[in-house]
Image (cartoon, rainbow, N blue to C red; front, side, top):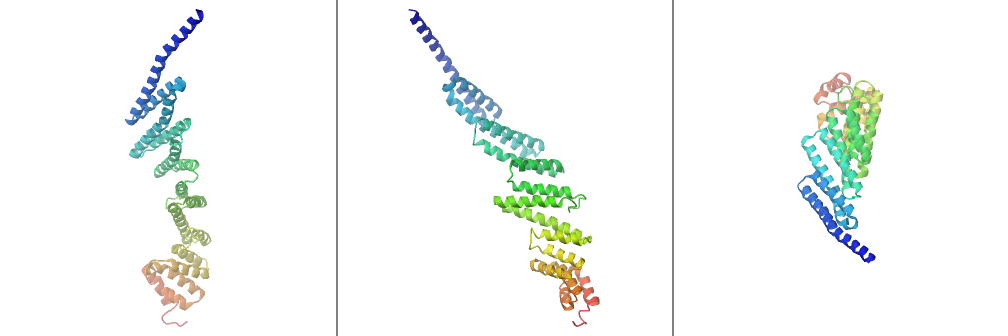
Length: 344
């Protein structure tokens, strides 16, 4: 009789537990459905709260809550990603650093939550967005003249994605700006550092098959060195000018402007043979008309005159009789070489 009584009590407890279990499963499903509805309505915080409630109940149910648990774990990282995307849309409208920082934080949170649930859909996408957001932050700060902040942001972009060619290119631009100490657009300092970043941009871009960035970096490096070399030549520092201009050819060995400036610098440095060589290369690559070529012919004529090659000098100066070089070329021909009246 005692045994029967114990069995009856156990059966009674089991029967009481069935309605309670059914009620808890219903609550889990209700919470999950609420999360789904809130997510579709764009109420992501409310959706996250509901999904997490469903997950909590499902965990309490054990095996009986496995289905709801899996579905909630599947949806939570997705909602975090959608929430981050909405924050990014706010940034796109405002273009403010404050909203951009909020976007970065939202995607960082998405990565954390995605890793919590071992989600392989959301985590790679969120991680991929973060370096681009830091790059955007650097561009914004660069535009505001905050070069220290721009440097910090682009360094973080590179740290998050070492294969980010555009970030290396932007880093070079920042260094160029910092090296332009007098604000005339030509670097006075940090030239070697800027070239290192341009080189890195080119190397990474080529590895990634990004020809556009590689070409931009080469062109920018060429232009910086051409400007620095030209200024040095005009200031009479011909040795430095020749060094820098020769380096510019590493980025474009068909640059008519660089060869012209090398010819000019070698003439100033009393290297007429080198001046002739570079002037002829400049003429080979110059695609402009007579006025564009006049300056090159003038340097060629000057070098030939220095070498004592009168006929060649007169011929070169005759091709320099255009634009601003017309008067000085005429003076050379008439008063120094006497091209029309003196035989070779």
